[in-house]
Length: 345
Image 1 (cartoon, helix red, strand yellow):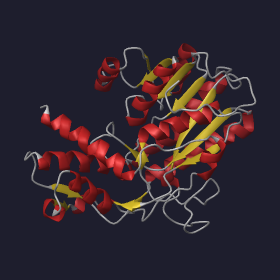
Image 2 (tube, rainbow, N blue to C red):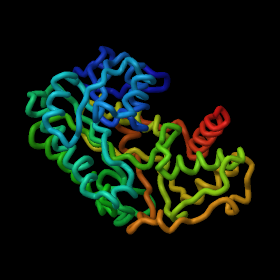
Image 3 (tube, rainbow, N blue to C red):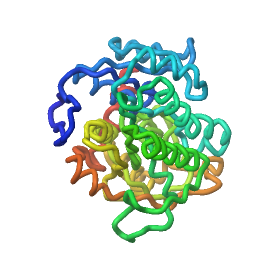
Image 4 (cartoon, rainbow, N blue to C red):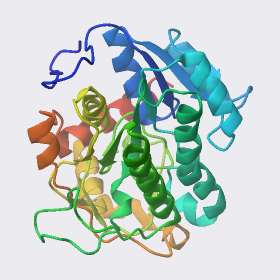
């Protein structure tokens, strides 16, 4: 078991020591990489669902995690999911796969719905149709984008598990469907299905298309004289940012708990995009950061979420979940990583 990861108290027979068969979708993404690393360290047998025989990310996955068994499948193809479940015979499933870029979801809402929404239904049905409703525990990656920055139940405290949903992007709408169908299968079939409503979590594994990695990568290149400008959309939106590795610990804790439930994972504090930019430039000794930042109208979304702030009290109390990396530490990890990356090329 990883240092600093405590097993929550449990009243059932779910064994926290014996290796499990674990099937992970989205294993080639940020969260999937952190999760694979932690599961392998715990001794679990990890199966990664990868779409397409010639997917270039498959080679990267096999290089980084040769112990992961690759299973071909697609969240939009129910028959492939049934095969994947039969091959892996999973004790746990982590459904992290999605069209996860909010901006892209406006450009391709139909695909976003098929993968991030209906794909959840397809996977749950694969578990049910293969007769594993009692054997397999299922984690659904829900998102703070379902809240949409509106309708705080308790202003100042942040969104919790009982707050109202008001998604403001095709991604948020699709994820809300996935969230509710997951809850429906929990209630209808008695499946152990837990939904993690995760607020923004970033890190050195984040893709370059996401604003946080775009910032850290550009700041590193600008400080090294390899790039002149950083192009961004709006700088005023505020987000609740944490480190992805901490949040993956929370996912795992949800499936080790004695009862399935929904949990918000968040930092409980919010910072603007401008705060992130300023802090990143400061780490490389650049105070006049505005000289290097330009706004690109093409990056402004049709509808924007003003502020996202989460309340993780339930997860902290029930799961004993805690964050180990704060906002400043997150940015430093990302900038230091990209400085090393660009310096080595």
